[in-house]
Image (tube, rainbow, N blue to C red; front, side, top):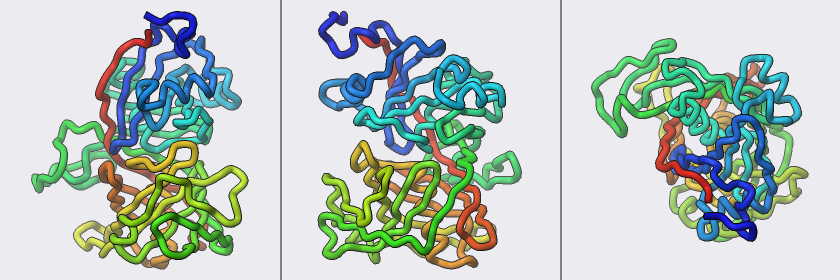
Amino acid sequence: MSTPDTPFAAWTDVSFVKGHGTQNDFVLLSDDDSTLEMHPETVATLADRRAGLGADGIIRIVRSAASGIPGAAEQAEAGAEWFMDYYNNDGSLSEMCGNGVRVFAHALLTSGRVPADAREILVGTRDGIKAVRTTLNPALGVQTGDDVVDTGTGGPGSASDAWYTIDMGEWSLDPASSVLVTTGGIDVARPGLRVSTGNPHTVVALAENAELAAAELRDAPVLDPVPAQGSNVEYIVMEPARSDVAGGEGALRMRVFERGVGETRSCGTGACAAAIAAHHWAGEKSPLQWRVDLPGGQLRIEIDPNAEGTSGRVSLAGPAVLVASGTIG
């Protein structure tokens, strides 16, 4: 039982679930009517893997209209009843989390906050409304419009896997921007490409998997110049494209250092940024569909660029898993 001198005294009896998307893990707090005070220090302690429940991020489940978050009331009027109030591991706010929004949508479904047969869920975020729809693990079938046809080819997962596709919205990049990234374990500073997918990202291309494995991401990479809002940093190695997918499918391996967190097993907005950068570097005739393999699993990205290739829309597909539930206190 909590006592007044514990860091979670104000959150006694608050229910939570813990889940992950490709092993990027989150604790989701139930605060439907917005009664909790989210102090950064308390959030960071709850996310701590020794002093708290342990997570890459903390998500508050709250009704958009009740949240008091700027812009959330307008999102409620537009159909996004629920808002994903997302905090990094260190207690700082983040605009968006692609893995987190899938787990958030899965929690809404399993808790009955949205109907079990909902095909699309509108989620409020600090980066605008995200449309999330249920789908089948693409390793098991092929997409045809809004449906996936099981090909019987097997692969990881099963037809009961909770996979979701998210319209991540607008992205942009500035090919003229110049940034150098210094990373432990990599001999010289490497150029990075800045990509915005709601969160700021800097993508670094490496030549081979050995370089990717050698990167030491215990400490934050050093960026020159330093972005005003900070940046996630993605390290990628491009692999041969597949020809058995309509239009071809690009493939890459990735590791990521997330601002306010450190190295994580996966990053959804980062995987989108990595695929966008890979397409940019490979040229306009390169695939628009990308498979991104991360330490925590696999994500699928689809890019819709403008004619210049400097902006467009992007969608993200991947799994969501809930592993535990309980109450604080």
